[in-house]
Length: 291
Image (cartoon, rainbow, N blue to C red; front, side):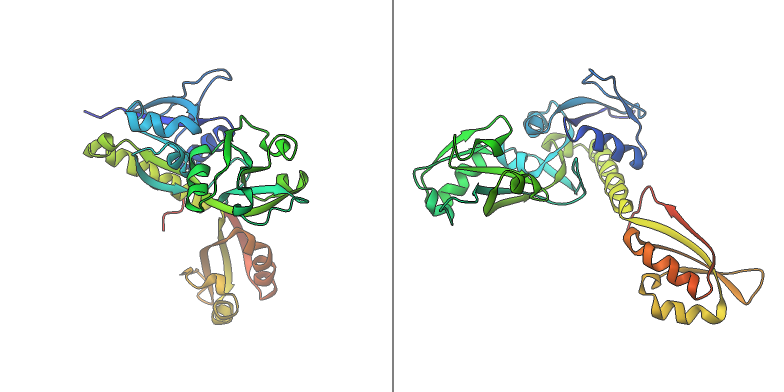
């Protein structure tokens, strides 16, 4: 008898990217525009959407067996959960995000010590207070409901905000003073659920497939035919083909090559292969890549 897994999915900006990622991993998730309850194509999984900021508390308390949230919110909520997988993706890109201390470009503040007695706005209140305590700085930390960048300098002296590229900070004429932490999406599990062998195996399988889908995002498959006499030249001059699969063709003077390369490499590699005489070059997308 299978064990039903109660899975928490992040509501909000991560919702769309998460559904897309699960699709690549082999799980079809559908929901109505106003629904908080997803429909899975796996009868052994149930759950609902909740805000990422709250997810770790629900997982810790056992409402969910597992869920997706940010490493930052696990730390902010001081949740006792099992971190199963690091999944580096977000609403905008597949890169690590940072919580940074930022001030107006014209402010005289150079280090965190200069914020003594001042006011900081952030969503990440506990982490910010702990950061200030480590630096022996006493400052007021107030919770921000969003649009934190616009609050300086009129309402607060500084902010702690999440950034991927820094473009929003620059647009609001803000300067980064320090980085509090790096963060990314993580798959977390309830401690009791993690101790259940059936649930643990199911959670681990999902984590592996989600990681494999992310691995595949940055890569493509490549197939081509090449004269055997040019094989060594290609393998020597084109390092992206260090570990290809090489198969003989019906014409023994030709071989078929199949490999996986970085997506960004293909724009340089394909013309180079064509110039050395490769034929039948086919680039194809990947859904999952398990190292």
